Length: 186
Image (cartoon, rainbow, N blue to C red; front, side, top):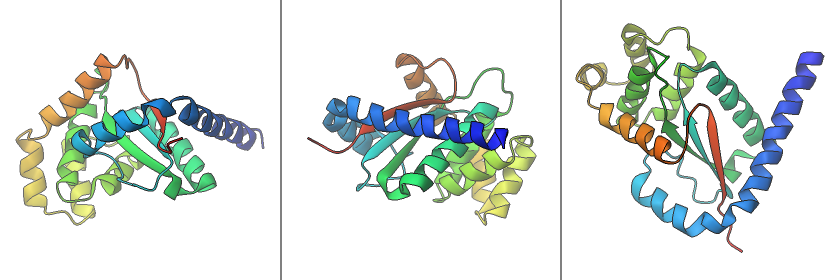
């Protein structure tokens, strides 16, 4: 009962933060929308969403897993259609598998399976070595030859690095990190 109460308090705190911050940051709406339309292939692309949540995350970070769980609770509580989630990679140097896991998620994106792959990585944080990353691609029914080549050749290293560099430029120092914007004008 204590654990459930603690989870609810954390969940409702995040929800309150999302709501308050979305209205406080609403002045960034037009500028940020333009940025996302041009530069953000990582979003859920929900044009009808009222709240945009930019998540800076690391697939190996246990706190990021908790953040995903809490964000999912908030979306379930208030309606997923109200949220647009923008995922940004921020692999921490102390996590030996985080960079390659981030690259693998981008290889999965090439086959329109980013979010499914994202979920598998967070469900299996204890197994993020390259062999496991390739097994998850097979589990999702991806073209494994294409996926494996993408991962082995490091095709997505620069994509992940660009997210990381942008995060540092914006003052991100750890994960998870959430930025919330109100997408409703007025």
